[in-house]
Image 1 (cartoon, protein in one colour):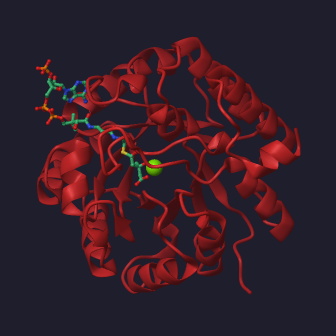
Image 2 (tube, rainbow, N blue to C red):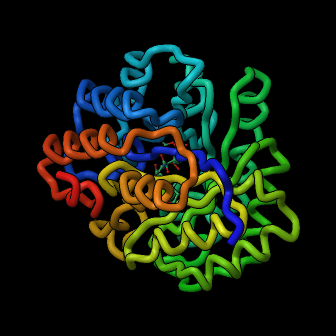
Length: 302
Ligand code: HMG
Ligand code: MG
């Protein structure tokens, strides 16, 4: 079995996690969480998003979150930017890395960002141009890479087409979102086999929600196929508020960072994170939100 010797963990809890909570957490607590994650050795954190606060009120105040974070060469604090307005907000508070996000399914794209996939690509082109011209790094997300809550199964060819468009505009990496966690090691393998025909493995990351309990198995399959960047969320927080069949039904949690770290430790793969400090960060945020811990490892080590 060939596995990468080092995995980069992209911690999405402060964004993907908190965007999906019923209550909007205050800025000081968001910053506190991010600082605890940094202290645990997490070196890449999606700290907020500059989307419309009418669409996602939980991410309002991302300016203040970024303003409170220290400038660092060791840690990347990234943000989602759906359009130029979002990029301008991000640049105004010194964000150095942003992500654009679209989907491989039309209906999900409409629900999430209010435009078609093709329109989203056109919308992102000036975002990419300006971001790169200003020295920012640009990541790209594709949602619904194996299944869509509204359209069902999604073809790997469609994901490949969207990925090529995002790479062509200058994204250094594509994060493949199994937004509703319907993937299995089988469908993830089919997807990656198709993508790896055209895209270098170093430009792909996986972003697995754990709705059906398949996330760790899917990640392991991706690691075996050479993927070395994995998104995860402390305490398994998260989901996209626009991924439910109804407006009140959001996609359940991401793979928990604690569970991912525990698995990587068991496989002898380096990641740079202190598991016990990460578990403490997970406990902190669960207490703040008064919710159950979505990490099995976090619960086991309490
Ligand atoms: P729209 O309504 O079509 O936008 O929304 P618009 O350009 O027509 O503007 C309408 C209003 O929104 C205007 O204000 C704009 O100023 C404002 P008004 O004149 O009515 O007062 N507006 C903004 N305000 C602040 N910042 C901005 C911004 N843009 C417009 N950047 C839009 C289009 C994309 C903005 C909206 O649909 C949106 O914000 N969607 C974001 C949805 C979202 O954040 N979803 C969750 C993140 S994606 C995810 O979780 C999936 C992922 O984790 C991977 C996976 O799991 O698959 C990444
Ligand atoms: Mg997500």
